[in-house]
Length: 349
Image (cartoon, rainbow, N blue to C red; front, side, top):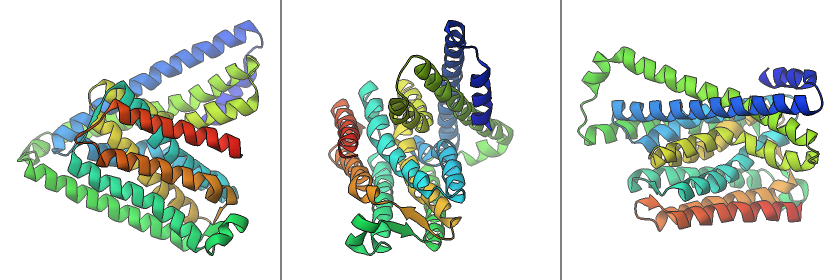
């Protein structure tokens, strides 16, 4: 609905210099709202973490990542229902590559990102395992090496299995978070009971922050796209840059705001959670509503799956060799991996 409204607004804007000025004004306002939404989201997520006595990385990997990934899941399900499953798969796999390489790389370059080894190891194996599970499932139901010629199909029942694994992951994460809270000796239960209304308000503000990010992103990208078109930039260049970048804008904005405020572990948790959800939630939901199964095109096996696994393994290796901080050299490696994958995708396309 927001997309249609933006298209209607763009269509009635005058041509020429005055129209460009109006587009620039829309972009400026959208950026302001986007920044404010990210600030609200990060502040309330940190407050919620302190109130419940759980690591910020866990909050980032569950509540925050669920909020920022929900639009992608909606788009993927609608694409699958409309007979465009390739968009659903591309959305999920492309987001993992962008989130892990580009977003974490930029965040670590801004400021080293602290993390708790125990938490990041557990979440990291689930993150990597989800990516490997997606690839293995695609190979198994594509009859091995035949996938490089005919592609594959993820059956509908596997979509439900992915969603069941997601539910198990969320339950286990919540249990782990409670355990960590009790081990930390934080007697938050009484505080939550006494300030239950305040906790509800925190959650509502957090949801409002997510809402602002998503709405402003959906307004910003079409406005930038139209401005670029009026400036004579080719449409295929715009599609390969601005549109692809726009799908990961909520995670990027949250990561930058988190890092700037000194909550790098929240940024890491958000990206790791988003990667897990892109497989189990986005692909799972899209496959579960597709009776004929979710088609996996040959290009995924030749390029996108290897690129996704490459970036995930680079991140996992960086974590294993880092003590308790993702430092700038690691950010440079992750960003370099993303750039290499992107350049290679254009060369092999």
